[in-house]
Structure formats: structure tokens, C-alpha cells
Image (spheres, rainbow, N blue to C red):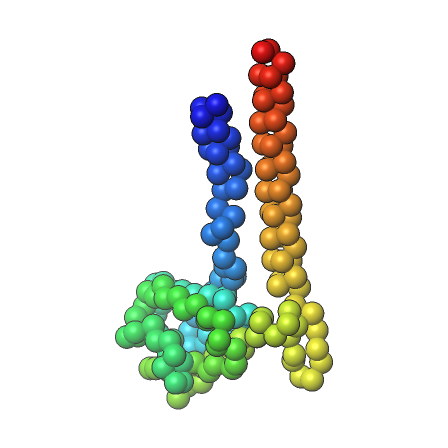
Length: 173
């Protein structure tokens, strides 16, 4: 009896996986340096993302050294270098517009802007006076519902297997 209970418990834990650890991991957006043109421009220079998303500043082998610094020092990739791999993740209280620049080339117009949308506003985003549904949040919620339904079905199957085994044991008596 105890052996079966342990097997059922292990099976239930295996079925659930990391359901309890589900976190909304945002997308990763990459900003590079224009390597084929002037070499003093961020690509893209404007970016619209959601709270929870990560911006990765990535370049290597550049002719000129660069960095990325937010105007209010929210993020700073450090000293200007020819090879940079720096990431910053916007948390769920940082919606707004953030301007950034390359310190050595700021006066030459190497500027960028990141608009961070608020994803906690009742699953909607308000932009330019028009309210639109945020499909990313809805899809994440649908995924959680599907996962919970799968878990519930797994628990039902485990219960049926357990009670079927119990009925077979009683019939043998």
C-alpha cells in the first residue's frame, strides 16, 4: 500500500513538472551598432517592448568603441568598448519611455529610445489614446489554463489508477 502511494506521489510530481515555478519570461530584443554604414547608429534606434522584456546591447569587432547609457542612468553598459554584450531587463513597474545614448558619439547623434508598455493594466495597453488588447498577456493566461487542465487530467488519471488497483485488491480477498 505504501509502495503504491509513493509511486503515485512520484508520478504526480513528474506530471506537474515546474508548473509552480512558471514565470512570465519576456522576450529578448537585441540592439546592435550599424556595422555597414556610419558605425555611429544604434540598430534599431527605437524599440517598443513590454514590461518584463530584456534588451540586449550586442556588438563585436566594431571599428569604434561604443556603449549604451540611459539618460537617467537606469542602465549603463559601462565604458565604451569594441565588443559589448550587455543586457537589461525591465521589471513590471518600469513602463515609460527611456532614451539612451553612446557616450563617445552622443554629439554625433548616436541616440536611441525604448518605449516600455505596461502589461499589468487589465491585460490592455493604452497607446495614443486607443485601447488595444495585449495578446501576449492573453496568450500567457491561455497557456497557464491549458497547463492547469493538463495537471487536473493527470491527477484524475492517477486517482482512477489508484482506485482501480484498490478494487482489484479487494476482489482478490
